[in-house]
Amino acid sequence: MRRLKIVTVLMLFILASGASVNGQCKAFAKKTCLPELGSYTHDGNYHATTLTVGEEAELYKTFYSDMEYRLAVCGDEGLPPVEFTVIDANKNILFSSRQANYPKYWDFRLESSQQLRIVLKVSTSGSQGEIPPSGCVAIMFGFKIK
Amino acid sequence: MNKLLKIGNGVPALLFLFLLVFTGCRSGVRGENKEADSLAVTRSDAAVYEDIKQAEKIFYTLPSPLESAMLIKSAGAVFDEDLLNPVDNTRNYNTNKSMALNLGIYTCDLSFASLYDQTQLIINYMNAAKKMADGLGILDAISDEDVEKLEANIHDREVIMDIVSQTYMNSNSYLEENGQPAIAAIVLTGGWIEGLYISTQLVDMKDFDNNKLVGRIIDQKLSIDILLRLLEGSKGHPAIDEIMAQIRKVKTVFDKIQVTTTPVRPEYDQAANVTVLKSEIKAELSPDVFTELARTVTEIRSNLIK
Image (cartoon, rainbow over all chains, first blue to last red; front, top):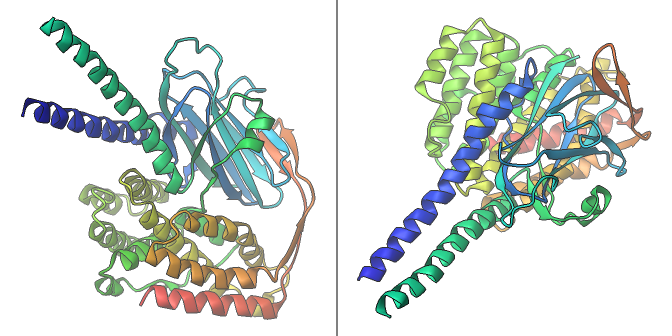
């Protein structure tokens, strides 16, 4: 009976932890990443998840000519910098945040519409603990007419 | 000894708990992403190039209703209320599939009305979208406070766009985080189809050549594969399978459009403080293929709003 109670409590704790992590990422995206879009209009799409050091997230999106975009990438305070790389359909790297000293956003416009791929990675730099840190990472897009 | 045994049993239990919580969170991310719209997680310690090559899971995102409406407006199209899905139709939508599709459709109509300052329509379509979100059980996606704020700022387009953007984000984040990726994908599909429907209907065939809106429609060829792959993530879900069959019909027509682009060259514009991705695009769309596309999209959209 006591074991049953313990198992029940553990299960509730686990479920609550999962819900809490998800809720935190949504709140994190709104509170931390949305302001990074500045004067750009947020497109309304939501992309946030929990990543651990060394893990990647990848996103495909079509971007249109005559629009100016801001791509904002944010990671939890406890995480090392989050790298993002923008790649075209021919696998050419168009922008690497690592080479630009890890800015939180990148502003760009296109002469012709393109499908681009964005690869996010929680960098391994500065992470030496036995348990790799884990936290929310969000990517958001803002736009305005050129 | 008894105490030691208890402690000995407690340590593995704590370890087990820790592992469950830790791996539970991680698998939650993976599981969520496996079906979600936009983010994939892979582990790799190799260099960026290798990471890209080794990426195992890829997820996709579509232009949001707000972005679609902005594309239509920026192409110089005029507003036509008759193209929108009448708000009275909300009473016809009782299934999750129809409510999800029309949440996307009404959000696109709302965005379209917002960009053209159609004050009464903005309120009507916000309420229609709210009915769909409420029907899907999306808690507080569009709250009464949002509607009140919209009404109080009905002449401020910037505020309205912010509200539309935030309520849309509330919907798709709720669905993704509550294990309903199929419904989330259906919402996105509804919004995308509505944007394409409105665009195709607004093209003046007398002014077909060099029509900017036609160019915007051609651009959607880039998104149709993204949409299909997004839907494939929930393949087996009856509603998704039905929708995929419809979207494949659109793809068949899009495949008739020839598009070629030159390699992309990034150049930094110091004055504007932005990077310009330079490239040229060449597309061939005949009026006949366009008419076929418009007809196909109209047929599909008619079924979606029934």
